[in-house]
Image (tube, rainbow, N blue to C red; front, side, top):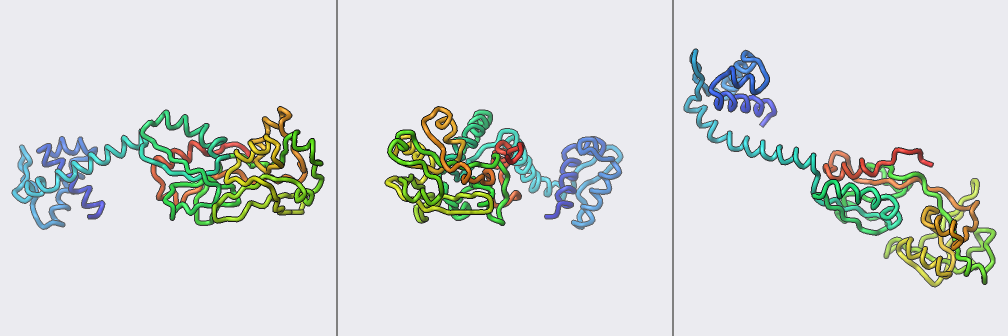
Length: 300
């Protein structure tokens, strides 16, 4: 049914209910002449007279009464559903599934979304900790968190953090028995803590950059994890060098528990983004989460 027909039937139902063009026009916010023209046009399209008009009253014809009985309940259902959606918009609910790294979950998502969920208790948030590039359509996620340079071209992305500077750190106890690396190639002679982001993927190669020189170093060590925070714990325990976002290590560096190395080789990556397939397909709850996470500051 076209939007024109829906509008005209709503006008007819209002007149039939009010039994008055004057009251119906006031309720609909239109003039009496415009309302009369709408009803006449509907009758012409249907080829039926729907209302009997006298100088004192308006009443449905037999055909009009039949239309009222068949259509009015359905319009009531639609009105109730729209009311429910309006309530949902003011108090979003439902489940939003997000795949994210532990770093993004701890430093960005949890601080902001925990407050959001308290405000909207019907909102349910499911976080899956996985730093791999999960196919959110295949795995039925609503969104994923990725660095800016990992965003696929067919996805909508909104920045949620400043750019991320990386660091390489080791514990003081580790350097009691090992020299400080001076060049990226020195890393191959050190015990390093690896990260494998995807069970089916390879161990992550440390990305280093100095000027125009880009280097990827595959390191060796006794420990491999699939997320960053256990790697931090291993580094603090003196098991070797770890490569991670500077923000994670900062308090331990400031406290003297970790020592950064190769600082002039540590790159800065584009900030974290929340990514989803299409803005047109996003739910009210997801839109609220996106706006809550949106980063308004400068990239760096």
